[in-house]
Image (cartoon, rainbow, N blue to C red):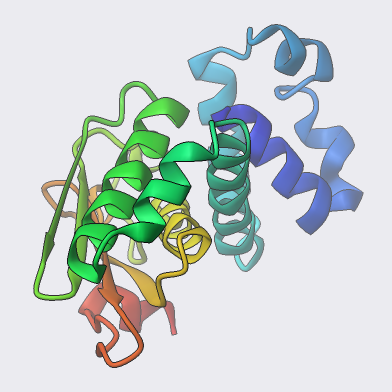
Length: 195
């Protein structure tokens, strides 16, 4: 799902560059699920050179991955979650977001928690943050977009942000979300650097 969601995001955000990226994310490989790790890393490396396009592509890819995962699942869990009181509803939705992340990238090693209207997902091995040298801005916006989309699809108002990023020198990639209409958005140094 990860290569397919990034490919679709490139189609939407960088249509003029699609032929270039399809050298690695070729349609036959997407259909057969045979896009290798090296090819995917090459795509991410070249996307990072696109400057302003990178955050838009990975964010859109995260929303696609969440939408495709939830659309392909049974509607029963979403209905059951909708009947829960808000604290349990938020916890269940965040755990669903963690499962989407784990399904999109089996190497992600994601854990999740919810405390006092704050959701937190920690990704120990992010495919987006495997870089040779530390970067200045977070690269794991994909995961924040997954969290935001899953919460939105469960009717939970939230703003998801990257709190820490392994590529920017963090121990792990951490995305957080303030939950509910009255919750304050999470403001971190990494997010402020994004502008």
